[in-house]
Length: 71
Image (tube, rainbow, N blue to C red; front, side):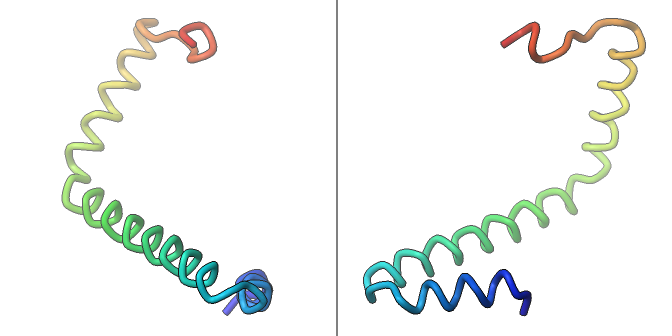
């Protein structure tokens, strides 16, 4: 376990039971979301490579604009 996580757990240990449960739920949800994204990306790596190649081609052709111009 990393020092940062150990520090977070020490601090969480001082919280009320309800706050600890809320924090634990958030952590578990984040871990589950990350696992789900990893699986989606693994299953669709070919599609993602194709999309990235298309985006690079568009950029090379000058068909893209910086986000700060759009937003």
